[in-house]
Length: 258
Image (tube, rainbow, N blue to C red; front, side, top):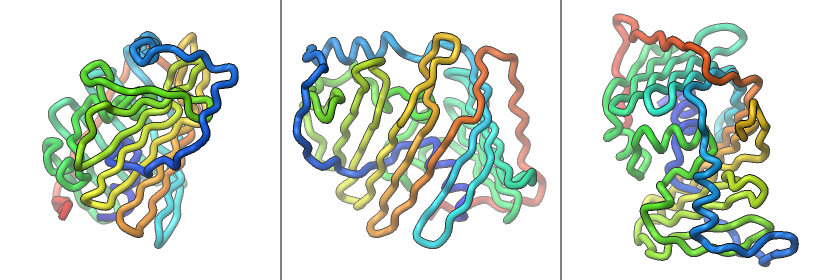
């Protein structure tokens, strides 16, 4: 699988993540509130726009190479996520994701994928759906924090949430900013597959009253292989009328995710 597909998928999906190192608790200036209140505040600050139209730059690096691409991102919340990647003005790839379908094609090698989330879920080692993909891009928790019970503590001036009921296959941690209760970082670890990934949000910008991430930093480890992607939003507009042009060119070959 070529790196353009990896860039697209890793930008969108949190598969598993680096285990966080234990650190000293620092409670100075941070209010010690209940776990229920932390979660409630997170959802009170949920993204509340109908569409996103954005231009971003993604820098990709793994053990073999590094590159950067420009990406146009369009989101109709809860309906469609669309991306178009270019480099130096030349088109590279497109992806369109709906609640039931993942469609992608890459122009350089003439390959495509068109199906549901099941194959990607198997490849990445965690269950995926449209909501998880959307939450990553909007700075929301990849899991529904209201469905399960969590412990909380203050760690390095952040609220840390961890599930009370541990999963033998993977572990997950959420770190929330006490100023806006948006995600600072979310981490998952798949021990069985030795896969780890950390998705962090260095800064948020107030855009028309909405707290929106300026940067998304991704570190993914698969055994000894490290992949990093740094995403910077160049500009963002909300609630515009959008189109999502997508058609797999004739003659392209299906991508194998094995």
